[in-house]
Image 1: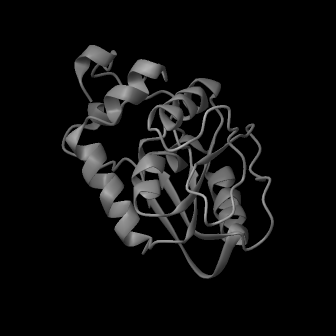
Image 2: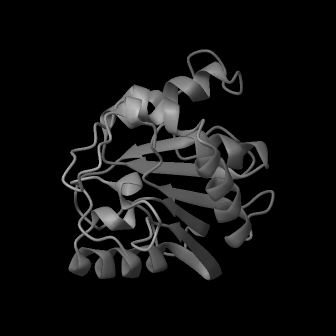
Amino acid sequence: IPLSLGIRDSISTRMTYSTDYFTARETWRDWRIEARLLIELAHVTRGMRVLEIGCGGGGLLRMLRERGVCVVGVDTLEVALKLAQQRAWESGRQGEGEKLSLSPPHRLSPSLVQVGETITLPFRDETFDAIIGQHVVEHLPDADADAALREWKRLLKPNGRIALATPNARYPDPAHFADADHAHVF
């Protein structure tokens, strides 16, 4: 994480989740490698319905959509969802005036849903072929992380996959993941 984004060597640093942060992180080599690996681990293929938990500025949603995937992104942050929506419009894949909504599999426009701090998500059982979460689970206290995993499993179709990436406590430079919003670093 570049120091220009305000990350210091203190583990108590409060991360600023802003448009600048979400835009910058998608340029980081590690973010791109990790995103591709998550897609691979989830065995994502054309025509699947994929949910991204904590979709941020929508970079991973765009990568999935380019693979012909019906994507839904959820996030608690309005700033993230506004950026993801803006970038979806700018990509030229949506018609003028079209609203983002839960799409049938043949439409490739991302659907975006703002969720609160609750673990329960507003989808029916067995809705998704895969669920991807990139740097989300570490923000949940242990009890909530267990509940979230059960909820995500509920949303998966039989034989669906969950692929998660989270900071590693053994990473050579722990300041790389310094964020006071992290409840647990695995």
